[in-house]
Amino acid sequence: MSPAYREVMRWDALFDDLEAQLESAATRGQENEIRERTRVEQSRLTLVQRLTGHLDRPLGVTTRGGRSLTGLLTTVGSAWIAVLVEGRSIIVPLQSLSSVRGLGRGVGQPLTGVGARLGLGSALRALSRDRAQVSIWLIAPAARTTGVIDRVGADFLDLGLAGPGDGRRGTAMRDLLTVPFASIDTLDAATTPE
Image (cartoon, rainbow, N blue to C red; front, side, top):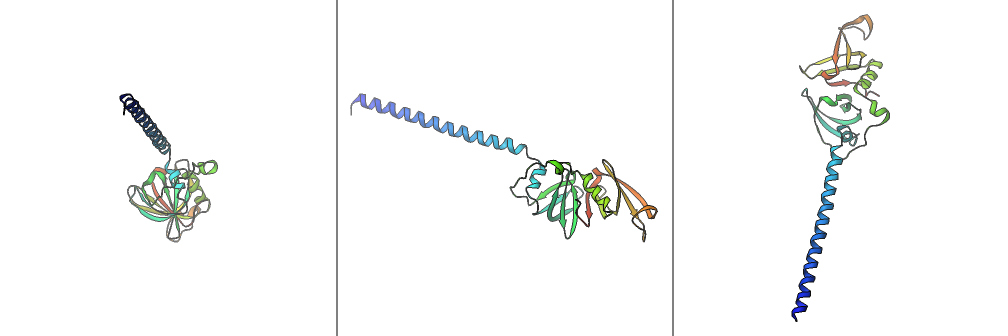
């Protein structure tokens, strides 16, 4: 082989190597860009989106007040979820969630329209309208109180506490307990609020 031919082959090999390196760098750059875009997209996900991606499936929740519940996720509002546990609908404010078990990789869409406006007050007003007997579990001290929701304000509810044999309304109410939403760990109801 002539020295000139070897020199051409060496240049060809050098150019091939440079081309391979550029191709490899471009591929790595694209992969890095895809990973970065994925991270940015994931950083915008909300807990509500994670939960809506799991509607009508079983999950477990642990609350700040220490309750551990396992049931079917039936409703996701903007500030609360409803979990069906042994025939009872349990409302858990999102601020009370300590952890959630059993969520798959699924993600739902952001809430829009009426769903986006379904705050905790909306769920509680539905229960108040139905005059449903509820049990409210407080975060601290971890305590349960049973009664009928008499009034729902912007950030609190009044729970009518009936004495033994008392009715659900009016003068039969023995006492009224005012509970800030921030103190509610969970709320057990016989029905799911609409």
